[in-house]
Image 1 (cartoon, rainbow, N blue to C red):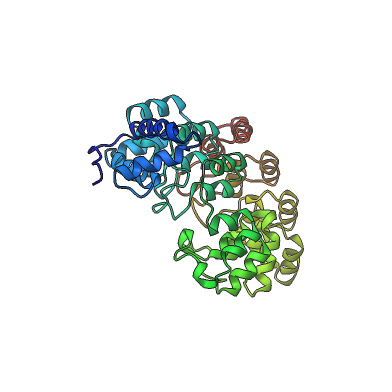
Image 2 (tube, one colour):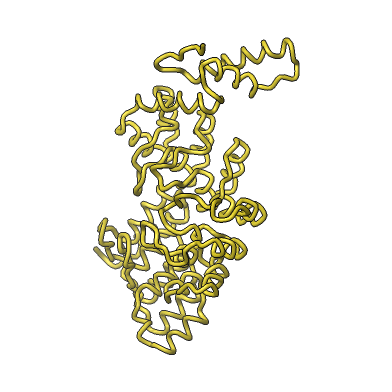
Length: 390
């Protein structure tokens, strides 16, 4: 009969028990591994594996942490408050894998998710040292694993650390990695290999990063037009990769998908936009086109659109509905900011959700995105506002 765990099992105590068991195993077999000792401890308490035991311990510990405490901890993670994070973990170790409200946008992530999204490598390492789950509890975060986020946010060093710690590579991760060999091997069994539910609740095509992956997914019936919970189609999602999404967008077009002018702007396709504008000059009045070009840093395209009469105060039709200048400020793109200001962009414009200026967005982005370039943009814009009088 299995031994009973305490009502509030302690993972550190179980780790010590595993090390002690390893010493016992090595008395008879010097080549014994820690994994064998951990398995022995897990089975002693009636669990099929060490990971199953650890998951149980984490779930029990997490239930002892309230949502307000988790929310405050995630705020510290997002802001990079290392000392506060250390204090909180010393008092409540379960916080390292707790699920709670995102400090900056929707969903319920874990601390490791937030550290990756905010590009805080020091916090990320601290969480790993505190035994953060490298695979994540992703059910309340649209099924986004920590490893997926490292691809989305271009965090190669964090990705390497997760993989070294044993992060699992599923089909979505293989797609995001652009690993055709692994992707096609995973899809060899046909439609049965596709996940029952895709992250964001849309089409799996949104996560393809190679034309070969697109071909195989379309062959298996992946939808070209299915929108996710944000009403984003696969071609829109791929256009949001900017220049590296251009060949993928063009490939989806060959499969019969439809693209909007804004999607051509996001990938920097000036030639197609010129053709569209020649056919319908009124398109230059579409704020979405200029916003798409600004969002993804296409400076020469923005200058060309402004020369053709695009509105320098173009406003986004989604989210907080900031202006093009808000977008450039958020990205920390000083040269784009100067292009828009020279064309007459209003440095005092307010977004429609937070009622903040472009300079204000840049200041917020310094914390949220941990991008020091945003501070230079904020200083430049603030100087312009002061110079023009309040």
